[in-house]
Image (tube, rainbow, N blue to C red):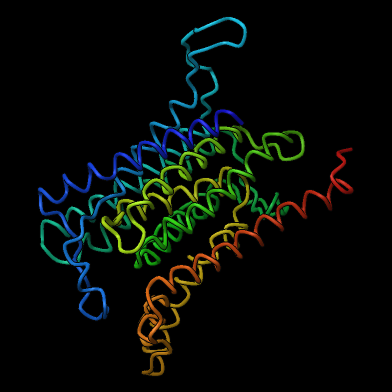
Length: 354
C-alpha cells in the first residue's frame, strides 16, 4: 500500500510542478493546438500549448520507479536500496502506456509540422498500434497471463494465443481511440481518467490481497502503475482544468487509453472495462452512430459528434458538460467496481474464502 501512495505522490508532484515548465517551453517553440473549424466556441483555444501528455508519461514512469526504492529500513536506520519487486506485468503495462503515448506524440508532432489538425494517417497510426499490441500480447503470454475471456474473473471461454492477440489489438486500439475522441473539452479526460484509474487501484490491490482467489501475477505492481497514473493526471488537471493552459494532446490521450487496456488485460478484467470506461465507450458509440446514420439515411442524429460537442451546440456551457460527464464517468466506475466486488462476495459466500 505504501508503494502505491509513493507512486501516486511522486507522479503528482512531478506533474503539477513540471507542467508549468512544459507550458513555457511549448510556448517558446509555438507548439499549440489546432482547432477544427466546425467546433463552435473553441476558436479562442487555438494556439494553447499541446503535447502535455509528455509530462504525464514522465511523471508516471518516474513515480513507478521511485515507488520501488527505499531509503530506510524500519528499526535499522537509513539504507538505500531497490526492492526486488519489479514484476514483468508492471513493466508490460508501462510499455503499453509509453508505447501508445509515443504513437500519439508522433501524431501531435506531424500536426505541428504541417500546421493543421491532421496528424498521422490512419494507416500509419494503426501500424504503430498493431506493433505495440503484438509486443504486448507476446509479453503477456510469455509471462503466463491468462488467455481466458474475463469479466471480473475468467468466464470459461479460452481464447488461446491467436485470439488473445486479436483481443489485445482490439482493446488497445479501441481504448486509445476512445479516450482520444473524448479528449475534446478542458480537463474531461484528466478528470474522468483519475476516477477510472482509481478504480483500477482498488481492483488490482484487492487482487494482490487475495492471490489464491484471483491468481493475477504482479497485481501489486499493476496497482502501482494505476496509482502513478492517478497522481499524474490529477497534477496535470490543475493546469488543464477550464480554462485550460495546456492540452495533453494525442500524446496523453493515446497513452491513457493504452494504460487502461493494459490494466484490464493483465488484471483479467477485459469486459469490465466497458463499465469502468463507460464514458469513453459512450463517446465512441456516438461517433459510430453519427457516421452510420449519415451514410445510411443521410441524416445526423447529433448536431455534431463526439457527443460532448453536441451538448455544447445545444447551449450547455463547457464547464457544465465537463462536470456532468465526470458524473457519468463516476457512475460507470461505481457500476464496474460494484460488479467486481459482487462477484467476489457471490463466489466466496459473503467474502469468506473457503
